[in-house]
Image (tube, rainbow, N blue to C red; front, side):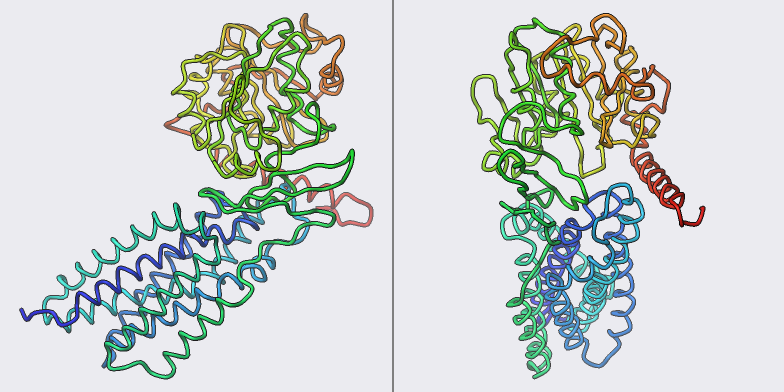
Length: 541
C-alpha cells in the first residue's frame, strides 16, 4: 500500500465535523426547550429527525462520492452544513412559534409537544444533518483514493475519527459550550468550524473558489445577526435574568408591584406554569399554590419543637419560604434541600431570597435527589418530594417502590412524606400510580387531596402510622395560618384514601411513568375539547 497523501488531514477534518454534528444535535434540544421543553418526547423527536436526516445524508454522500473530485464535493458539504447551522439561531423563533400557539397551557400540551416539536425539528435541523451525513461517505472515498488501500481500511479510519470527534463534541456541548457561551455562540462556533473545514478542503482539492469563499462569508454575516431569540414575555412581565444551565433554559421573571409583587422561576417551555414562586414575605402564598399544603404535617405534629425537613426538588426554595412563615409558633424549622441544577440555586440566591448555607439550612446543589438522600444518615420529620425533570415529567427513578422504601427509611417513626403530583383530578393515572406505589412501599394507606384552583394533588404518608383524614382525630387545626387550608379539601370529591396495590406498581425495573404521563395529558386535552364543544353555539363532539 502506498503512503497516504493528506489522509491525516482529512481524518482531522472528519473528527472536527463529527464534533460539529454533536453540537448541532445536543444544542438542538436546547433551541426547542423554550417552546416545547426537553421532555423525553422532545428528545425522541430531535434524535429521530437527526438520525433520519443523517441516513439520507449517508445515501446522498455515497452517490456524490462517485463524482470526479470528491474532495471538492466534501468541501461543499461542509460549507453547506456551515451555512445552515449559522442560520439556526435566527430561524428558531419564527419556525418554533408557528407550532406553539400563544397562550398554550399544559392542558393542551400532549399534541403540542409531540407534533409541534417534531415538525419544528424537521424544518430546523434536518437540512444541516443531511449535509453533515454526506461527510462520512465522501471522506471515505477521499481517504481511499489517497491511500489506494482497501475500502474497509478507509471506512474504519473515518468512522474512528468521526466517533472520537463526536465524543469530544458531546462532552464539550453539554458541559461547556451551551452553559458557558449560550445557544447562539455554540451554533456559531460549530458553523465557523465547519466553514473553515470547508475552505481547507477546497484548498486541498485545488484552490478555494469564489462561491466557496462567498458561502463562508455568508456564515459570518449570519453570526452578526440577531441570534437566538426565545419566546416573548407576556404582558406586564419583566425579565430579571435568564441563563442556560447544563440541564435547561432558566429564567426569573417578575410581575406586579407592591403587595402584588411576585417572581417566578421558569424552566424550558414554561407554557402557563413555573418551577418556583417568590413573594416578598415568607409564609402562605395566595390560594391555588400547592406549596401551601406542605406545612400541614408540622401542624398535625404540633409541639415537635424542632422540625427537620428535607425537600427533594428544592428549586428556588419556595417550600422553605412557605414553611418559614407558616410554622407553629413553638416549632423551629431545620431545613435541607436538594436541587440538581446549580444554576437554579444561583439565580434563586440572587433574586428569590434562597437562604444561604448556615445553621438550620443546608443545600445539596448539583445532586440528584435519590443520590443525595442515600448519602445522608439523618432522619427527618418530613420529606417533601417535588421533583420534575421538566414541567410535567417525574423521573422514573424518583417514583419507584424502591425509592419510596429508601424515603421511608429516612423518616422518624410517625414522620411524613409529602408528595406534589401534577394531575388534573384524583383519578389521574399519574397521581394514582405514584400514590399507590408510595403506599405499597410504606405499607400504609396514603391520603390524597386535590389542591383547590390548581392542577396539583398532594399525597400524605406516614412511617408506621396512618395519615389523618377529614373528620378523624388529629385532623382539625384550631388556629394558625394552616387552619384555612383544611375546609376546601374536606369537601366531597376533594380527597380520598389510596391503599397499597390499588393502582399500577412502579418499580426500578418496570416503570411506565412516561406512558402514564402521556395518558394524563391526552385525557386532559380530550376533557378540555369536550368542555369547549359543550359551550353554547359549539358543535357536540
